[in-house]
Amino acid sequence: MDPLALPTELKLLIARVLWNLDKRSLVALSLVSRDWRAPAQTFIFQTYNLRITGDRIIQDFLHFLQSSPHILSYIRSLRCGEPKRPFERLSFDHPVSVADICALTSTIPSLRTLTIFNCLVSADCCCGRPVEWTISVPTLVLSEVVLQECTLKVFLSGFKGSAFSFAEISFTPADRCGSQALAGTLDFEPLVGCKSIYTGGIISHENYPRILSEIRYNILARCPPVLNKFGTVCDLFDPRDFTAINELLHTKGRHIEDLQLAFSTLTMADEKFAALYDGLVNARDTDGLGVLPKFWRTLSLSECRSLRSITFSLAVNGEPNVESTAILQWRYALRLLAAAPRTLTLIRLGMDFELYVIDASIKRCTLTMVDWKKWDEVLKGFGALQRVEWFRLDMMGDDLSYYEPLQPRGSLPQRFTQALTTHLGERMSDATCKLFRYI
Image 1 (spheres, rainbow, N blue to C red):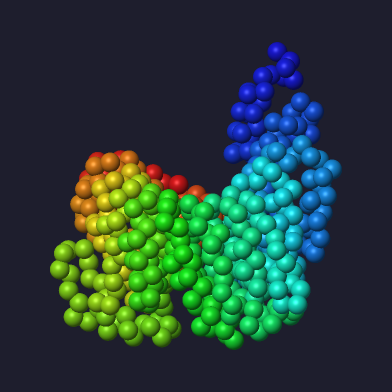
Image 2: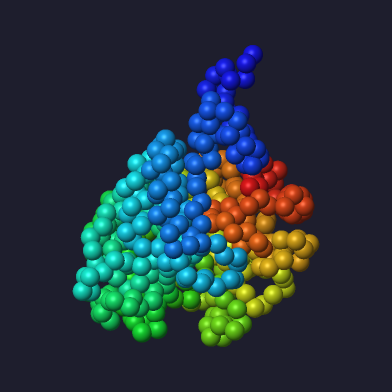
């Protein structure tokens, strides 16, 4: 059979396999002939990473799309950001403007998700008032970005999608904005149409600590009543976080099907470490789920009657290590699971490994201190549970890629999964272990 005469469906299948196994070969395949170009480019451009390494990268990309309009229909997810390695500071040499972001969303009609990460985002301002823009994309993600003072206003007022996510955003004063740019009332009305919201941390600028510290709580308070997916970072040491998140779960939790929770970490250098130690003094394990600081409040999941999936981000450190809250996070997650609705079909455990821990022996990490027999007992209570997924959340050495919040960051090493499988198999029932999937 002439390979050029293969059915389109078979060509797409071959292209998909190459996309998963050998992307360079897929790029080479797109250059073989016109008949192979479309199937190959369908996957090459489906999720496209645009690295912001110059001032005109986005404009040049837009010109490229105008000269190759057939590619527009392939792009489903676009990620724009400045390459940086873990723990490397951002240079902010090439800021991204809101005008560029809006141009991308209006030019690519098939775009479903736009992610802006690791960069400075500037707003187009005139006399202190932001120009009105429309960000027409179903899902908008802001991750580890620095915003000028009025940029968040522009995003909130111009966003017309159904899923909004931000993780670790911070602020810097804009040269052309007045000092009271954020003092005005932020318009959270566009969020009413959202079905999915993830709220990470907001780092206040030193000049405006009060104003910026309230933004996240305002977003939590203004979340729409019909919310299907919700994720957040919970500061276990801040009672305001418990109050804000519990209020949302109590009033709007009945429609949430997918809940994602990350927890704050703590080291001995933190000023709250003394309070943590005091909270553990004389604390009692009254229900067999493990001792927790007395001032840690419990998040109530009783109103989440539609809950099907729950995800935790949990620290895995070198142990014994009294300088972290790693083991306490695992106990807290177990306590939440014990009180969760029996409707759960999927539990996802994201492991945020301390540096080099994943390459060391499993006998020297947090996982050996977890009470797996109690976890086994709790997991058996979910009759509808279909699987428990384990995945890594740590930042890998030279990886310059971006990952959505609480999504796998590469595969778990085979040696680690084998050791973990053996460790859990000796402490948990066969029925529970059969539910485990290692991503």
